[in-house]
Image (cartoon, rainbow, N blue to C red; front, side, top):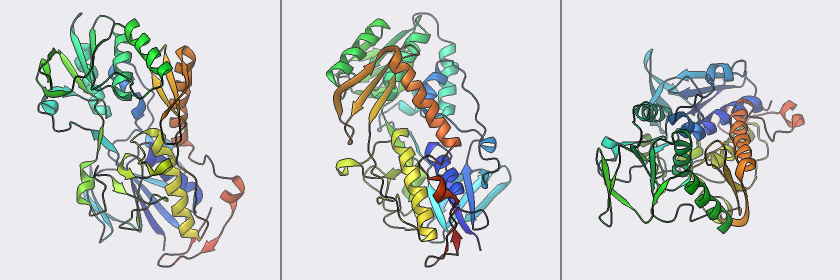
Length: 398
């Protein structure tokens, strides 16, 4: 019998894991199904570009996985039963239950409203393609001089605010942050960020924790009222709501607790990667929600699954960071180099070169989805090892 592997979610992590598993294992031994609600791969790191009116290259998942052995199922996941080892889905064909032997949970995250009143009703988000498209349409109807308020001074907020200010200099772009923008950056990084923000004419409200959002304004904890024709909420991410009902062991953040191989600590036939997984990196610090974390998590999970199914050697690659890449419009960028546990060091790249560097990173991330064998030695890919592990059908390493 084929060993049934189901991968939930075709973002960076899920798509890479599915493709890498297909390269690692033989088609006659495994059946790999990739479940995703949308037909296209979404470059989430470019949603700020989409929102301001730029057109992105379409990347149909069926084309990306042609002749790979991965079966794509376009459906919405409605529930998971980790005891019966089934996934319930809804699609154009109706409802169905998909049985699995190994499950890879990569449903990602959505915007986090932190319970602030009015966010859901009045604020826009760019954590998803539908959200970015709704914001794009709303921005297209704004008149000269109207105010767009971006709440949140993290990477998403900075990239969107600078992208919008560059693309729409006729608008009044403002940024509300809890602290100084880029307060985690090196002195050189903070200085360059302030320079770009000033050049683009972005108004910054520091130490402004937003406590309520209305249709045309927000209120901060210290009583300030900031006007906004459009409010864009970029204050971090929360895991997919389905996670809470899975019965898997969860961290305080709601993410699925995994070991060094990305396997659930409570259910060994479930792996969690990307924003859904609570994995520890250098210094035993949880990896942050990001493409920079999700890609190596996907490699680790796929290689671990393949190793366990073929009685191979488990991977022990350390999960660490090297830099943070921030686009500041199309003409400027900031590459902040960091320690293994993501703390800024003195070295940073800025300007047009950094913008080109970030663009290469974005292109490389999309390339990695379509070419998931990075880091796999050719000789190991070609080897065939027929070994049955306890409780599984015989599987051969490709």
